[in-house]
Amino acid sequence: MNTRATAAKITRQSKSNLALAFISLGRERKRDITVFYAFCRVIDDIADSLQLSIAEKQVRLAEWREMLCTARSTEPPLARDVRALIDKYSLAVGMLEEIIAGVEMDITIRRYATFEELRVYCYRVASAVGLVSIEIFGYRNPRCKEYAVELGLALQMTNIIRDVGKDLQAGRIYLPQEDIARFNYSETELQELQYNERFVRLMGFEAARAREFFSHAAAALPREDRRAMVPAEIMGSIYRGVLRRIELDRFRVFEKEYRLGRLEKAGRIARQLLKSF
Image (cartoon, rainbow, N blue to C red):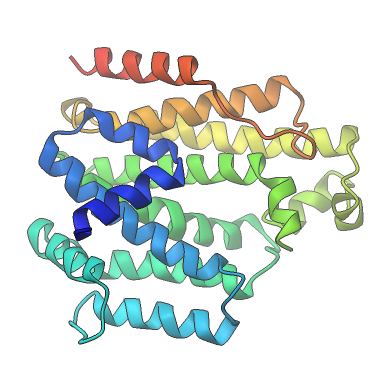
C-alpha cells in the first residue's frame, strides 16, 4: 500500500469528525490534509500507546521531530510526505513541533493547576493543528490565523468536557484544579464519578468557556476566507452540536458517550456547504 493510501486508511480508521470535514476539499488539498492528519494521528498514538514506556515514547517523538527536517535511512514513508507538505505550503516547522510538544505533555502531565496551563496544552494539540490546516486549505486574510487559534481552543475544550470519564480511566484530569475548587467540587468526588449539582455547575462553567471560544472564532473569520474555511466550519458546527447536546443533558459524561447521529452530521455538513456559495 502506498503512503497516500496508508494516510487515507489512518484517517478512515480514526472515525474522526475531521475526516468528514474533508468532503468540501478538492482532490489535491484533500490528499494533502489527509497526510497531515495521518501525521497528527501517528504522533498522538505514540503518546497514548500502552505498549511503550515513557522513555520509548519520548525517543520516538524526538525521532519525528528530527524527521520534520532531515531524512533518516529507517524513516517511515509518511515522514517524507510530511516534509513534502512543509516545502509545498511553506509550513513553519515550529508549528509541527508544537503539535509534538502537545502530545508529549500527555506523557508526563496528569493534572493542570490553572486554565492558563491548560490553554498551552489546548493551543499545542488543537490550535497548532488548525494553524497548519489553514495553510493547506488556503486563505487570504492573515486574521484567519486568529480564527484557527480560537476555533482550536473551542474544539479542544469541547473534547475535554465530553471525555471527562474516559480521561479519568487513563489517569488524566484536564479540568483545571482551580475550577474544580471554585465550585467546591473535589478530585476525590471526580475520581468516584460523583454526579451532583456542584459538578453540573463546574461543567457549565467549562461549557461557557468553550462557547466563548466558538464566538471569538466566528467573529475572527474573514468574509473573504469563508469558502476556504468550510472544512473548519464543518468541524465547528459538529462540535457545537455535541456541546449543545451535552449541555441539554446536564453533563452526564460519566455514563454517556455523546456523538451526533449520521443524519444530524449530514445536515450540518450540507448547511455549511450551502453557506459557502
